[in-house]
Length: 155
Image 1 (cartoon, rainbow, N blue to C red):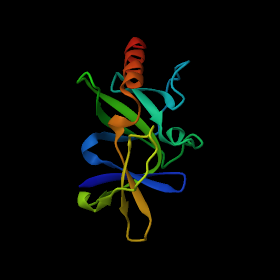
Image 2 (image 1 turned 135 degrees about the vertical axis):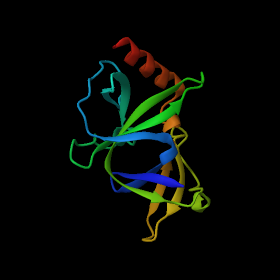
Image 3 (image 1 turned 120 degrees about the vertical axis):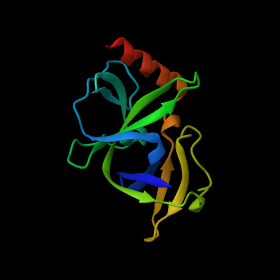
């Protein structure tokens, strides 16, 4: 399966390319007062508002620095209501795609209860791990719905 790889801190992560609509360069985002701490801002993508989350902030790291290798991955997510929507994930070092055998991803054991989006791990040739991320589980549906409603109200 083809994955888009990126980094946060010293760790590497992967999202299935099936869930990514497009990867775009870092862009200007509109801030939204009183929003979720990881909410980086609102992206105008082809005339449509797309909420963007800072992946580093989700992991309690410093916010992503706007630089050449910082990218916004536009991910397709489906809310519990069945509504499909784009969600931007801002991340660092989004520079590589790689075919990784899904069967080689293994259960890492204990995962934080509030981090459903963190999945199994893949052992790379250098012995490091690549963690599978599920964008549709990054935030609880209620928060995603709130961001969706807020972004639609902002237009």
